[in-house]
Picture 1 (cartoon, one colour):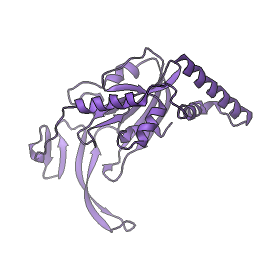
Picture 2: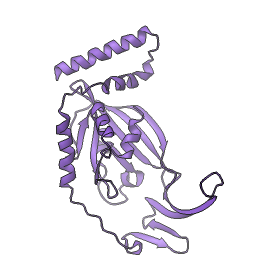
Picture 3: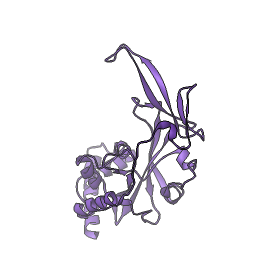
Length: 253
């Protein structure tokens, strides 16, 4: 690994020298320059087949089941027939409400459709933790189960949560990475509000937050793994392995 660290730093030094020589080097863009080098090679030299086997172990060990039920039988959710809105009894999370749209510039002039509308907070947080492991930049990702995921498990950001989840409205656990990585020993690299799909989510946006963590490295749980940008790029090109939130935040790198 030491050899790879030296090789990575050598290429980085040469690339920075070239940028400075051409007078196009900007200190504020160092993160993007490093990303360019990160994507060039499998600097960690971890056999990518091992990484795929990690993903497959998580997918095959998942025992979650999804069953169709009537909307009116959902626990802690209520359909208000008068207002025509489906909502959580806490008043948090989101509402599902109908909209009538008129727009002469689309395929049809008007149509009706349901929308998911965030309640109480301005979206959620999509967080990605970056840290140097043996001198090579790595990113903490989560092989996350969501009931609507294609293939059940998709590789997701370090943190993917609405503010209702962060405030434990569901009475469950707070995401594991919040206390560990987003409380101390970190530096913000990028922080942007990014809009979500306006075809089904009404006025929804999420805070995309990339941090550089400088504390002790560990794994929050068996579904988490530190991957290089090269490995993540490989997964994206393979198709359905990487979820939309991770693809979105990786667009910032």
